[in-house]
Length: 294
Image (cartoon, rainbow, N blue to C red; front, side):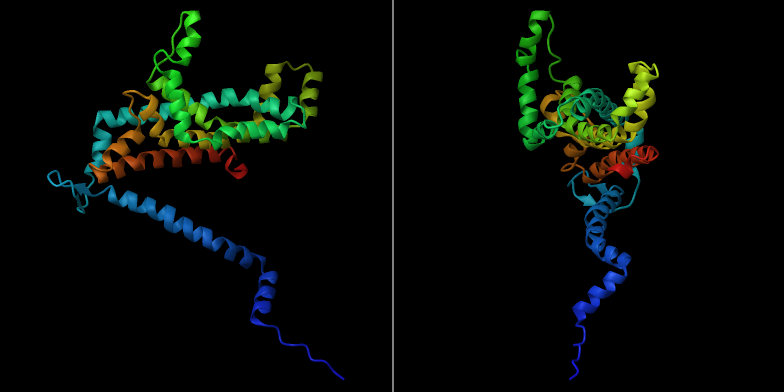
């Protein structure tokens, strides 16, 4: 008696085809997220860029779809826009530099000095501030930096006083907000640094500074660059913290926010500035090989 094998169904044939063609399987898996990226993200950026070439009726405040370059001309010819753009870049760079200076000793301790059993708990402690609300943390810093607040009370015995509200306060708050995004990449990079390299450098007579420059820094530079992508981009586009603790300070995010209801095409033109800056920053970071470790 002979038995007949039933014909393979369409599902089984499709599964066999995907098994034999892993590239086709990968393409199908990535098609949905890539389509979402193209439509939702790149599509919105395209609409943003195109709307920057429109204008606003000065009487009715309605958007008039007449193509011109007046908004971009105003960005380059109006001094306040240039000053705000440069100030925003300076704040983003300052926040990134402070995050690196603060994050490295913390990450080095968690990766090489702390008890291995406690390292996961320390990483969780680093992540804990991210679980709190952005506004709660920003307003908490507003109370700390207020005149007569906690910082003034702590510095008063030394004859000093806090910075109050302004540009310095904005940099401090943004540094606190985005610091975990710098600690985690550096911690991951330092975990991959063998302790034997540090011991070998010390055995060869290298001092701490030389070991850091010649051994540690080259290995964690991609991690620093990867973390800076987050701290720089998040600081450049932030507009809430500066409204809470910035006093009269204006960053480019504030200008975009204030012009959304008044002059939408101008706000769109202003919105292209941080996008272009971040693109150039990513191209610079790409040369370090950091993007491959994100």
